[in-house]
Length: 258
Image (cartoon, rainbow, N blue to C red; front, side, top):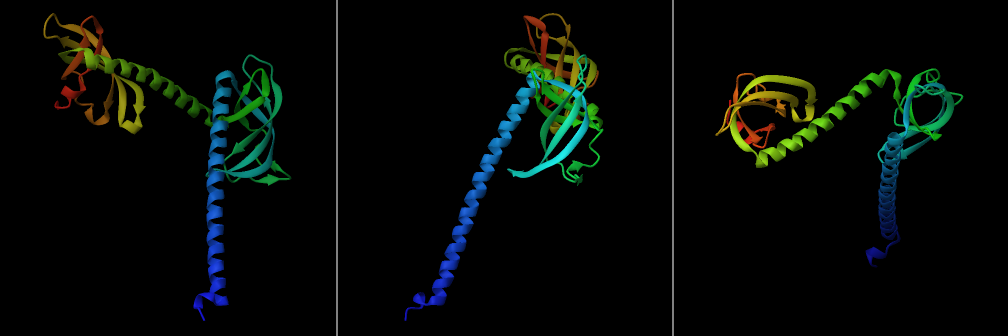
């Protein structure tokens, strides 16, 4: 008798194939669910960003916060919170509005559906002034100053980055010269991921031809190079001969300086 035709072995083969089939079907379902969840998450983020562009951000007091359904979206577990809030926009009449918010935060306790500790809390929301039912939760009041500070920091970084792009153009087309640093201003604008900070530097510049002139520039200086770019140090710059106020550090030549 062929051992491969025995009932016991056939049952094992069928069980393994069945298990394997279930595994691959389950894997396929997980992948499809993850893709759809990611798309839904991205679409929601896009909708929120568009609402922030046209909307009004204002404080609100929670009247009610009820626990809704839960879901697993992509790699996150979320709880729907059904809010009723009294919105208090500056310079506009207060109004009451209900909206839903999906939160990743854990540790909520609900009694009879009402989330403990939420009623009476001050939060910040953004809503469409033409349709207040389109509303999103932003953050709690105690987080507000920190978040506003971070937003202001990002706005300042955006403006500084525009200046950095101009400096890149000057480095490509400008005329080289030596310069002595006469003043340095720390702009209180850190770039932690680059280990750098934004600075404003003032110079006495000595061109290869012509008289010494004063100018300045904005630059991102690494924390380890602060000594190199201190007052009195002689460095290399590039400048636009047609517009002497357009100056940039000659980063390549300055690498060899101590």
